[in-house]
Length: 69
Image (cartoon, rainbow, N blue to C red; front, side, top):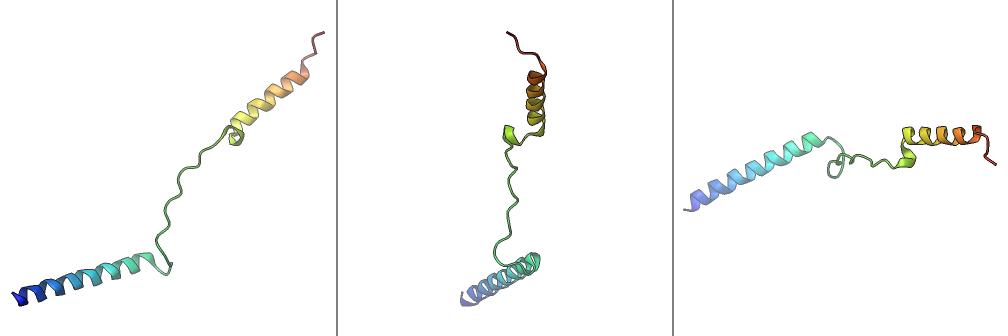
């Protein structure tokens, strides 16, 4: 029974060592956890070029029209 426990312990240590080695190799020299991919940025209407272009067109159209009255 003791021999089986020792074998299981050695196998677990070997798997742990290989896992740590692969983790370090994949990460390179960067410290800390791997950076997560940034979530897509939500664009508000004031950041949308089409929205701003449309507003500018409307503003110019109102300036060019003669005032009623």
